[in-house]
Amino acid sequence: MTTSRRIFAQLSVFVCLFMAACRTISTYDQAAYEHATSAKVDALTLMDKATDSYSSHAKEIEALNLSLQKAYEYDKGRPLNQITMALWDKLLDPNRDLLGGFLREWKSDGPLLPKYVKNKKKQIGEGFDVIVGLESGKIKPSDAASKL
Amino acid sequence: MAQIDWKNIESQTVTLAKTLLNGYAQQATQDARDFQAKAEQQIAEWLGDLAKGDITKKKFTSLVRGERDLAEMRALKQVGLAQVALDTFTNGFMEIVLNAALAAIP
View 1 (cartoon, chains in turn orange, yellow):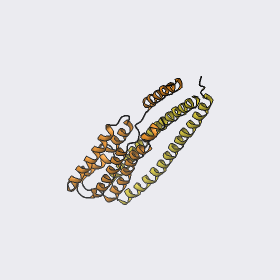
View 2: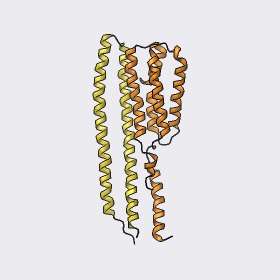
View 3: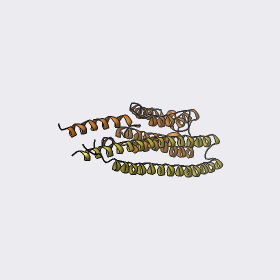
View 4: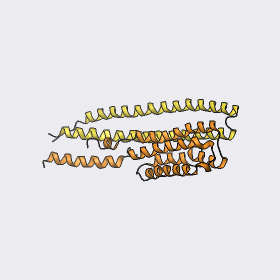
């Protein structure tokens, strides 16, 4: 190996290590994107039924909670993913007024008024869009590796 | 001895920073404006619903609080996108340096 090639090889290793160390947020993850979009569809579909009693849709609510839990736990296991986790926490917190709060209200107040459900669907749909939007804005793993 | 073109690295880095950070700042400002306009319009709409009796006062309050939660989520998203811009800049900078080093190898 010539001296210049050795220098280049050493520089490449240094650059790769430096870049990995300097990353501040996780890269894009297709599975996380799919979990979030799928949970959004499930949530909005179920919300349409909130004009009925909570107990009559207990199984669908359980299925939605499972879908949300899968998305949440998947994101929780990713490194440098604190912001996405904070977004999920806000969306799902029963003491706030997005999806967690909506499910709590439905359970405690009984059937909800159609206009309210319609307005909340729009709002909660936007909450999911924020999570999906951040994920799709992240650097693709192939771009992160770039030419190195 | 290989000579790295540091002037070229500097000029490319400045261009990269301008493109990435200006683009990010413009996008974030536009998003904030859009959100404010949309929130104002929606609150006016919900007040109309409240006046017509289509929603209760309690639910109106929940909608407004939900909008506040959504604003917090959007702010967090912007923090995340700023980090993405920073990481993109770091990647780009290292690539510029590496390419300059490669070009200097005889």
